[in-house]
Length: 500
Ligand SMILES: [Zn+2]
Image 1 (tube, rainbow, N blue to C red):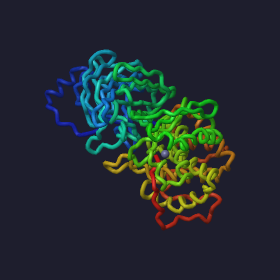
Image 2: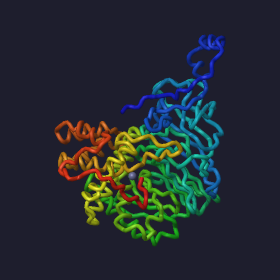
Image 3: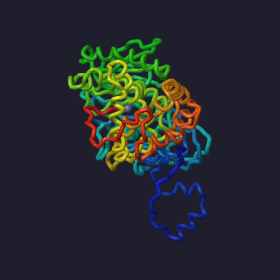
Image 4: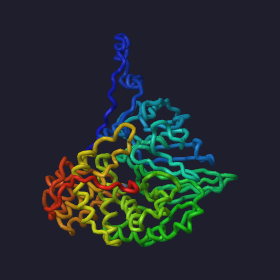
């Protein structure tokens, strides 16, 4: 699906005829500037107001100053370098939490107004299509959630972490908050001495000035705003080497470093295992961030996946399960991070694949046959489709539950569709498809239609009918090779821990 700009339509107050005539006489540019600021979106079916039309962000530079307490706002400066794709009298950023002190466009003060979850910026002079522009916003970034707001900063026992999926990056910083607009990121995090700050990518500097230290990180690859990560805490950064010298760095509470080491030591082997399946790890570094926080989920933030520490310390979670969850988030680095969904309806491409490798790892290392889990998923699939929609057309989130799209239909339900595809085209073709998928769309975005096209090309025959039924059908099609698999009436058991 190609996203097209879709301004929010809402009834306008009737305008006085004389004023309307007068308005018609002035230039279109002024007319637009005089119209009320309104929130815009890029037309995502599930999140209509996410993202903004008219520009493409190339780089974010985020400066954050942590006051030493995680219940007070951080001082922040967000600088955005963007390429305009339309003439713009004004432009919208997504930003819904925190105070805006000032906005500059290309070094000149600009007017700004809040509208819905947007910050609407009016530059001193209109911007023409096809130019670089730099927007600088001085603001606060508030770690205390507002009413009905969920996600963004996560307050940990010793500082902060971040969980922006799907639509919460704009609770932290002004941005074009949609995965279709990936950009490079620089983070400059200033904190009192004694704290350690880590962000996506690799460090480029540590400057200690008096009582404070500034930590700078830069990503070498484009990243979606939902995958940003900033950790500030009393943390240890544990370094080791992954396959072919890949720098692996994990971030853990200093006091738990020894206890957690056996889990940290698993990562290089898991990366090697996944590289054996789908090819080279796509980024400059990897690691896990184990946060002392009650998130209820893990999150594949780029190059540094976020985990609840509890997952590794609560004996209720069996070892094989914890490891398969680690592999789930790791596999997202290929599926979801390097190759991002063009729209949120494509999120099954993230979760279906991550569930697939999670299950494959459990099959190969812990003797838990994938076919057993697939058969159980097949039994539940019709119910999942009914409650959450088919994998590639999930139902919109319920009001007030924006992460409500993360339902079983896009996890096990989507992995089931991949299983059907492997049954249909055979293991060698399926494995070739997986490798080509992450290679062809590396550092980019892709759609469900792209996947169907590539699957057909690899198989050498048109699979659009077959995959359409599996991805968009209201009923689960028959499973190739397993005519005995039937939908079951029994509700499946709940999961102890939610993956993301
Ligand atoms: Zn996931």
